[in-house]
Image (cartoon, rainbow, N blue to C red):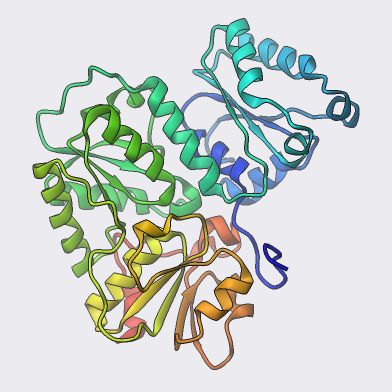
Length: 383
């Protein structure tokens, strides 16, 4: 049965993507749910929970409130707490129960904003989509609301990093490594959206000369900023080595020409791809190309979370369910993926573990490599 995970885990849910994207921006985020979602998010999906304060709450939706539609209690609770806590904004995100009852998130957010005077957003997440479906719209809507329309370009060449959340980058310093690579390329880091990012930084999003989209969660914001400010964008994660140099050239060209590079792939492998990289789209394509450049082995990406096929190369595959992923691996002799994918990889294939925070949570966190600083632990396995 499609969309049923019989052997593998699932990606972090869309509601957790909203919470993760907004975690550091000083807002108040409410998961509209009875109970349980907040503990799952805090213990498995948010590595910053014990080291950084953030106003992430759950509404405590009761059965009677869900059935009878007592929205006033939710609104009153949010208004009371917001007046005390004074957040920069308020975000209300959904879970399966309000999705089934037809809760109107935008309408409730509008009521909350009217009563508090604080910008409020409603996100009709269902708990059934992946973190990308939550984080992407959340980052884009805040950028649309708070980015300064009159922001002047920075004096020196600069770039925003779009799509930064620990669900893709964990807390192993990879976000800092990407920023360091950016400086070596000749660009100042403008806004790291949204790890190491403050609410005040949002106003400066339009000041960058180019945007680097490092995960699929940054794509909606990249398209928005191109419309608002004419800022070009490039897709890719600077996996250390030859691929990072190729990506740097594309970033420089985009900044000079003002033309976006709306594709994750920069090269086309020759021959039948035999190495499969499963995971988030941009990271998987970037690593696949790095493998091909460094070892000559044709590699392809299996995008197992939401990613539009128009951004992929012809050899890459979008496959979000077990019954799609398994046949996609038929011609591969080597599979690189989170360790929890191992049960669906046949024994005759070589399996190389590459943990992903959004898939296996904290279980393998210590083993997540910083690909932007040193990709040799992964690439050396092919040499």
